[in-house]
Length: 253
Image (cartoon, rainbow, N blue to C red; front, side, top):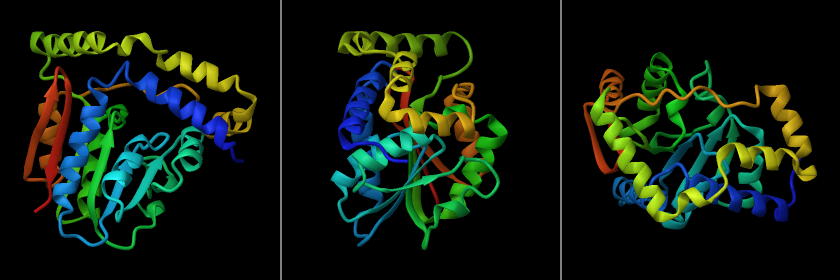
């Protein structure tokens, strides 16, 4: 159940524009994640990377350009986004359909060695804390010693006034950059669902799981750090932040 290259290009390009409404300084965040991964993988002849919640392959494609010798496994649960990625960014990664956090999801990845890095951007926030903890534990098992989990997302600073301030700073930054001039999440999905080229994929999406997204939890940065340490990561630190948009790195001993 494929999609034409022309349709995939159209919808991936619109996805890239749409996401600029939500990810503050999105391109810079991608660059920082790539900087961290490049540093972690220095001297590794064939790095193995895992892109968690890959969507249509936005981060995988950028990592593939930065680290052309890397093997990238990209996992997501949405058949529409996965097929767009397979078609438009097919050379960047091997795409896997699995639900992160469900029993057995790591077995579906087909990994043949320890990961050098697991990355994610604006994807893991939908997991409630207990599932996120088990997901972090599973990733810790998959990583080689010295490997890293690199997660770019919106992390509230704390509950209360400081959290509101960081969110406000991020929104203002997005407004100045012009991101709010693009279509929003709901508009993108409504338009894509109306495209006859994607009808089969949306039918599959409807059969497999509800079309609406899961609830956003957006745990505070400190809570993520706590869960990561409980999962076995002793070294956890933010390496970049604008407003509440942050890149959080956890290193495995």
